[in-house]
Image 1 (spheres, rainbow, N blue to C red):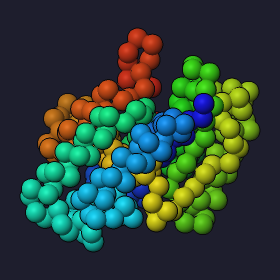
Image 2: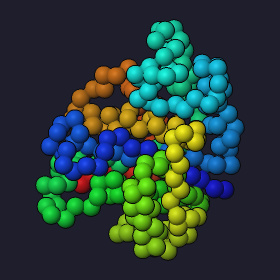
Image 3: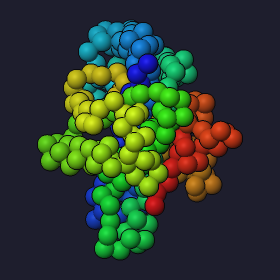
Image 4: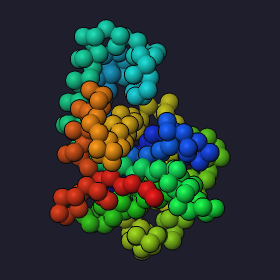
Length: 256
């Protein structure tokens, strides 16, 4: 049985913006999905939703474009159509079997703690995310790989290098042997958004609500966004958990 971790991010890795409250954080979210049931459980479900609401399954679901009602999502300016679409997405997220993991970094705290040495925030988050994925696979005796969204040639090359080093050397949290036993490929898979991969679109839809929920929990604040709050409540049933049921450190991890 083979699994895949689909990965998407919220925010960006530039440490120069760490003092800006609006750009202080970066979060990577992964959705672990059983690829033996992917076609029916997720792919066909998302294709049907797209066909029903937009008349074609070639639409690429992207949270920011949906919120801004850009391109094909302009039809969602109609309140009834928007409500119907949201309900279908929420039902799909409830029904589809996946495990969620989010790793978030406070870039300001990262700079303050580590001074001149600073692990690239994106690569730091990716390493911690894949650590948790490898440990999840190991606890169940499973095998899987990782697919993230392609960004640009230089960033893709650097990220592939970080992943490969993790595969070859392991980390303080996961031994090299365990990594090699559980990850089926030493290469990180990357795909552009235009490839219309529904696994990447699922994680795009949950990444921001997951991070916002973590940030609100950290600050002791309620989530105010209606749809994001509904997604966050669904994610409480999807996060990876410790044997005792704890999400912290398993389904959600704050850095540094």
